[in-house]
Image (cartoon, rainbow, N blue to C red; front, side, top):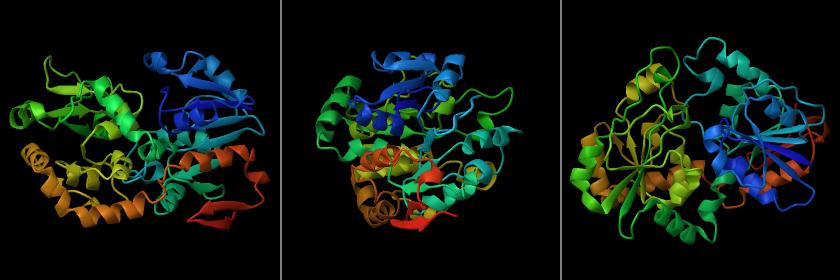
Length: 375
């Protein structure tokens, strides 16, 4: 079996990586990763690689028995008959996606439809996300598997404490220092188009350092869409972890998260650690720019904060803040993370091992914990 993996336009990360790490010891499986130059050094030295979007990458895809991807393969290739394409996707949807978005560059969604038509199986992290994924992608006649995300298995792994310590040491975070992971998402109006402004941070990092002192460190994780769009001033009190290959390591290393509308909130909630929401542009983002599938204010497992000053105050008082939102946090986890039990990869490998495209699945798929007839 020849498996070709793709993660976010050439990274070695996310659920495809978890699946690869589970399968790599099997003698009957060959592995090929689609890569981008900036991530070449992260991949295992002994794995076969092919450039994403290159002729070699196309040849790899067209030789695959199984393709595992966490995003659209926005490249030219012809899927061979009998190839199984598993789409893991890359996040629980709060933000509207694909056909549900309020705006997209002309022709982009039509082009991505070509990839969606190739998918044989789609993963869903939870029951509430399944109908949203089906509707957004027009994915009505093929299997969706509610498995949880393989990438999150490490958050419940027996070695998670040792892994946390190793990552903190690698990042230079001393024992006793509170690591604040900041994961702002991208904005459509600063990514698509011409003459776009440089990416900037809404959080005042200088004030973070002044007010919180040496016992806090800010770990900045930019979205992959804006990785090269921000230049931090020299000496800024920030550890830029945007290039760290695996975000789940950062969830373990961190003591709390500050985010806005990023799907990292759902994965981080698996850890049970505090979440703060810096939603300075909430009305614009929700009502004009992107749109939500549900009202974040109704379910947020932490405070919605409008200013940098409010965020810094909440970080300082995070224990009291977390206690005040404990019930909302528990409900959030029950709704969105109940399948994140450390065994999602097992369930996904079962899908791959079936070796079946939809025509051979005997008419069943799993949603909501039950088997449903495919129509």
